[in-house]
Image (cartoon, rainbow, N blue to C red; front, side):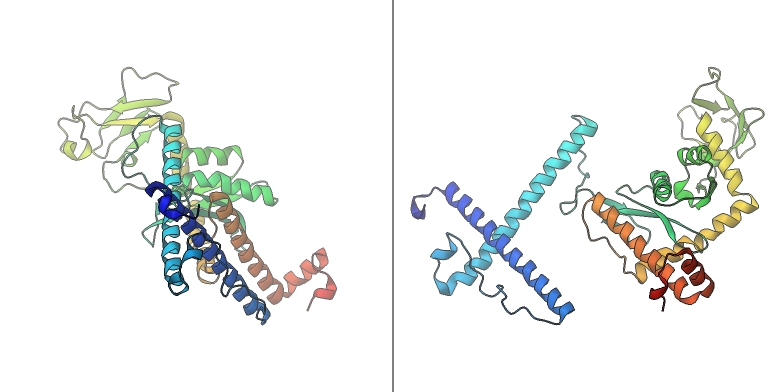
Length: 378
C-alpha cells in the first residue's frame, strides 16, 4: 500500500517496525561482509576490486520515498529502531523459554524474582569465578598427564559445581585414548563426593581427592565417628549414639546425645529448639568419604595432592596467557564444549612439537614408530 495516510496507527507502526528490521539486517549483513573482505585482504595482501560495500541498495518502501538529503538520517534512525525491535524479540523469546523450562522442572510454582536468563546465550550460566568475580560463562575441566603435561580428557558444562564434572572428564579421556589398567588421579576438594569416590572404586581408579574443611569448630567434620562402637564423639568429648528408633540397613541414621544441656558450648554447637545436637549419617556415602579422607592424609596422598599445583595449574596458565583463552567465542553448550576441546588440542600440539624439536631420543622414537615420514624430518 503506497498511500500511508490511509493506514491506521497500528498498521503504520507494524510497517515501520518491519521496514526498520529489514534495514538493520541489511546493514548488519553489509558490516559482516566488510569484515570478511578485510580479513581476506589482511591474509592475502590483496584488496577486493569489485566490492559491493559502498552504496548498497536498500529495498525499503519507506526509505525509497525519502528525500535524498535526509535519507542517511532516516536510515540511521530506522537502523536503530530495527536493532531495538530485534533485541526486544530476543528478550521476549528468552523470557518465554525461561518460563517454559521453569514450568517443566518446577510445575506451576512461581518463578523467583532473581531467576535470570542470558539473552545472548541462554545455555550459559552465572557463576562466581575465583579471580574475576561473577560472570556469565561455562565451566571447563581438563585431565592432565603428570609427566608430559598433555591434556588427556576435557569436559565443558554450564553448571558452576565441580563434582558432576569428574566422571564425564574421565569418560572422555577413556573414549579418545587407551589408559593404563589402573590410573592414579588427584583432584582438589571441589570434586570430593561419594558418587565420584564410588565411581573410582568400581572402575579401578586410584583416586586421591582433597576434602573440604569447615571453618566452624562444631561442624559435622569436627565430630569423630567410631566404627567399632557406632557412635560419634563431639569436640567436647561427649558421645552421640544412634536414636532409639534407629534400624540397621537404613540409608540414614540420626545420632544425638542427651548431655547437651549442661555443655558449655551448647549455644555455639546447635541452634535446635530442644537444645540437642544431632548428626545425620548417610551410612554408605559417609563411609566412602571417611575412607577417602584417610587416603588423602597418607604420605602418598599428600604427595599426589601436592602435585596439583605443578601439573594442571601451569597448563591452565599457558592456555590463558599464551593461547589467550580468556573467553569462549561460540554460543551454546555443545559448540562451547567443542571449542574448548579444540583449545586443548592446540595445547597438546604445542607440547608435542616442542618435544619433537628439542628431544633427540623422543624424535627418534617417533620416527621409528612410523608416525612421521622421514622425508618430512628437518
